[in-house]
Length: 327
Image (spheres, rainbow, N blue to C red):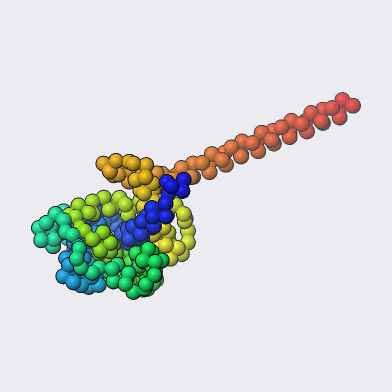
């Protein structure tokens, strides 16, 4: 077992899980908080990768992070405007933006299908040189992404606790009630979508500098990955404060990446990775219902045993009473 699951596998799964956790947080805001199905995530993630790669190649790896975040905000803004100003359904708005982003991403990448980020500094190479030592040289990537993700989690928790954040949460729960309170639901949706896609852009920026390469199809299936992470994280909590929910979304992303790593170790063909992802999502979605069914069956079994015990007890009492009467 030790040879099957190595430290390197766990480390890589945690690193990628943390990065993809940012996309899961984005979907958590749009899907769980705003109750909007944002299908532009795939294109927005690739946009973050492309912008980050081009700006990094220009010699500005730190600026590349903020540029990718700004690109994500712009993507979310367009998606939200289509919904709020032009009455386009959220699913259709996401599809439209995702389709348009394919051409935009190609344009950002200089109309190349892939771009390599070599021969220049990245965020990770800059961080690696901060502290000497073998331990830091081995774990600096995981520590870096963990710090960034923890900061992101805290910022989301803080923002959702502000007046505007509470309005966004209320918009997802009951738009009619929010409108009755004289709050502009269109504005809250736009802000929420911009914030959500900002984290998708950040995830793309980190991925580009982590892998040192970008491909036009890099974001394909990212919605499925994020959805699986959100659902897996939701298995571990039913109720709790917002910070706990946010943390478990990231944990769900790490668990998802660990499952994918196990699939790699089992030599599952890459052609079946999408199927593996779909199965993970299906199992994660079905898990709460399966848990309730098992609990209900247990309760029925217990009730049946109690009825049998009660019936046996009554029978024994009647038998004893009859014997006493005969005596």
